[in-house]
Length: 598
Ligand code: M6R
Image (cartoon, rainbow, N blue to C red; front, top):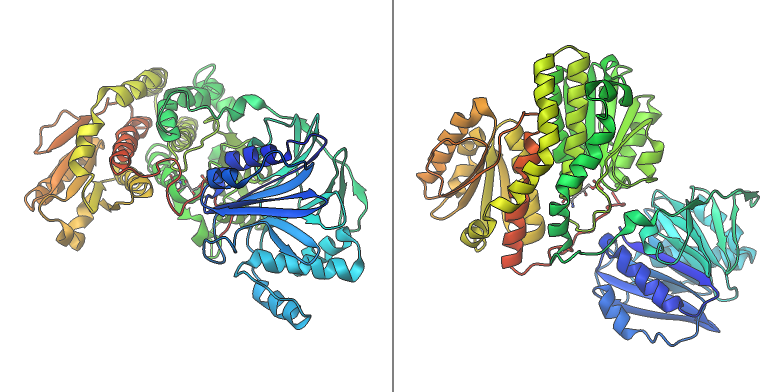
């Protein structure tokens, strides 16, 4: 979380570059923002709220060639101007993404050495520590080496000192890129922040110090020996941030799902099932799969579990990464650990991946962002082709992750001889037709009338069985994430074991009914809530008549692909509800797109 950007160049549009960069990084947090720039001395401008607020405070005529900027997702210390970055202590000014875990201990030591602090942030302490070492050794690179040895936790830093015209950067467990352009050099949490101005980029490795002047970038290891840099051209096509006429990125991204599905699966199916075998790893050597992820990516794991267990007969254990990383794991050399992540940077998922790797377990990453840490560190990468997802609430990346897990299930089921040629033919036909069916599902139903009926409620329930329960969880998360309505997902049969007491006159219950063998069972559960006053909404691929107050019918396709259609109404109902409630749909409160702290 938090986004940082820095520029050292020859032009005098530094403040524009920093603000543009921060706007592109706003998905990483939007509690407050600030910039520090140099013209004779270091000046700092900060504001609470989104980048627009900061932009209004900035005088773009100021002549400055170097600066650093920050957009904050608060971890330590409340959201206010004092706690906003950049922080400044003594001769040092920094922006920071990450968490300094031992900041309390360091704070005491620094206070014993006469330092005084004004904020409640860990970052101000990090800044004080760098200043302390800088004064001690009179060399900022040496000070950064000492800083790296002392602090525990995660950081990506942009550092400026009073006396030099150079920006320094180091990182650990938080992402950071360095980039070059015709008119200067950059640092940023993500390439998107600088792709408008820079031409080539590299990921800064851990334990390396980057020294960035207006015409050079030099990297040093911890012995302060120079190391080689490895820049690659920036692929500007992936950084299209145009809303293309849609009111919100979320809506645009929902509409992109047919293309995303096609782009994600087609490289694996150019010659039908044979190319799937050739392009995917051999999964048959594993007798157990652990899928580890957070949030919606965790929900894709639950869908994957249903499909892999049913079609490939391999037990799948799905766990939330923040739990998995600290618990006893029962994996062995016949286990494959799959991490699923849109960003490829989620701190807990990354830690789970590293834990499995440390224990010599085979790992595979399903990731959207090219070059992200998980994409680089997993043994095998299966890249989804969702393109850049800007809305905090994931839609198209969720679908692409589900599509990839469906391909894994299909591959494994085929390799084990669990499905016959006829069924494979049927699946391949459905795959071909799916983009159009997704499109029709987006366009053909009226989601606004359902939204109108439920948006004033304080509690909404999602119920389903089997794979529909996994989809209920995603529907419920989507709704609460962007509309701030308290919603819960329940296994349909479980509701009567306590939670049904919350159903009262008018409580909306959204039932998901696509599992052929279980539809009648879920219908009974729908009847149970209906007779207690619930407003019932059915999302189903069946023409079964039940006492739904509202019904959305999605096309019926092979089970391996059904979730990709079923999820669409859930996304659109959430979107329409959030719109009626006038919520900040693309940037919901308290959230950030990339969660790089644990
Ligand atoms: O980047 P990741 O896929 O690892 O992110 C995981 C979750 O933070 C993410 O899916 C989150 O739950 C979404 N905002 C939900 O829409």
